[in-house]
Image (cartoon, rainbow over the protein chains, first blue to last red):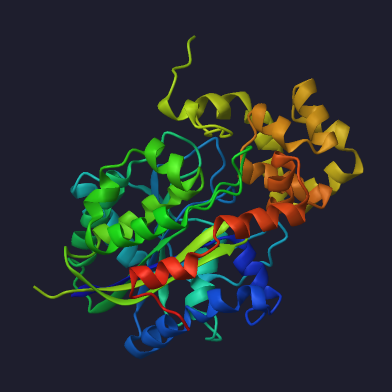
Length: 281
Length: 133
């Protein structure tokens, strides 16, 4: 049977992709941020997951504002990256697993999570930067992927609680797949940042730490907050933390914390890294 | 037609991108989206004014695009991720745009970010369990 063996979190801002492209990982500004990923990379290389579900938002590559699905997932054997018009280098395609994806889609919809299914889905930096952060040291990515897109761009957005519930359904869907597969799920984006308006540049370290604690041991704390309450503290783009809740819902109530890292600022953002594994009942 | 109010409308200095904003900024954001294709970027660069007219921007929107006035574009329904695709033509990053929203320099904005995060390592140590290198 397929099993979710870990949940990860990471920022996905394009500045990280540009820093990687420019070979800046050991520069003073970036070193502490990138070094904080090394223990996670080492762990992933030891356990060798077969597939990563990457929970991210599209920023105007695959989905324009003419059609904005609240939750959409890739159901293909390959996903292309493409020019975003932001000057970020285009990466080679990522492998998918259509049979796995369609199983997950069917089981989600059977549980009342009405997914948008995509047989062609271009993946932008929200997806590619996390893949790079965890696996760029491999020549070819050593695992398959399932892109899972959440609308965090055009309000109304799903609530933190809804994202958590979708994660719970996702776990049931994944773990009913008959093939033996080790799956990791990555909640991307966040933490506090606001790119727009006179309030841009906001970073709230204390709120970020509270979010990290909530994701680890008390998801109800974030589930009880409205999107307006989250944006008031974390900024309009900090709302991306709801995607961490999809990851958290896909893990059982109790988790082991194998790694916990925070750095701020990177570009305009507070950045949190978690490696959580399920505590067996 | 009456657009509904929201509790997030009262967050200061913030333009939550909702249906109302997206409706008002649709042509502007649609034009910005076209810049994912290089041939469209080339066409825009050759004649920005004509390209804005082709996408039926309002006069106000067109003038703000040509001037690189991103705060104005926010007011006129621009979404920050789409505006970023326009900012590239003015040689600007999200940090330049952030500085422009405050009317300060890029260096001042970067300093402001650093100030906002100041002391975070002490907070992590108090909290415990965080990686410290």
